[in-house]
Length: 267
Ligand SMILES: [Fe+2]
Ligand SMILES: [Fe+2]
Image (cartoon, rainbow, N blue to C red; front, side):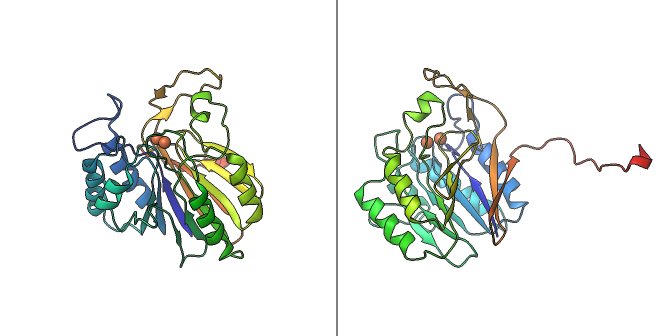
């Protein structure tokens, strides 16, 4: 089973860039096309689909998805730049509301996908309130033997990039305790930080995917200024082998190659 994780699209209504210079709509369309070439079984969008929660941005995404032939099922959860109502209205099948949140379990694949909603309207930081923690607890307890990928926007750990850590998931200890109770969660797939970062919590690998658009500057000082760079956009391909998740990083934009390796005799 192959899961393509695309995150932090930061779409704008047609014709508008994000952060003055990032052509996010173009990059998202290219990322979808690049992901589709790997023939994933599922595409997972882990938040910040829109840059400012504008209805027109979600309509652009709906248009992009319709224009890309042969896409597998697409599932989405919200990030801090998203607006639940606008996201749900333009993309009802991708982002259905359940008890006021965009959260759900996806069954029917070799690995189970659980999508959590860490959005707190008006805040850049994320949280799982009592209601969402209870939903997660019940949802995970319902399938303790199914290998699970848990997806959410805000990472539950500090990366060392100070300005991003201050807006990570609040109360990560509570989330770590939840993971320890549910060791079938093998991988936690996050976004938000616009950089690839990996750690481990309890039995789970925890990965932050790079953005398909702009990246956050790699600056590990606690007082690092909040800034982005135009490093190449990328996405993750999580391969469930039946025993483990194996993750590859794929760039959005084209580059030279592939060039075949030559044998020693050919020089
Ligand atoms: Fe983002
Ligand atoms: Fe975010």
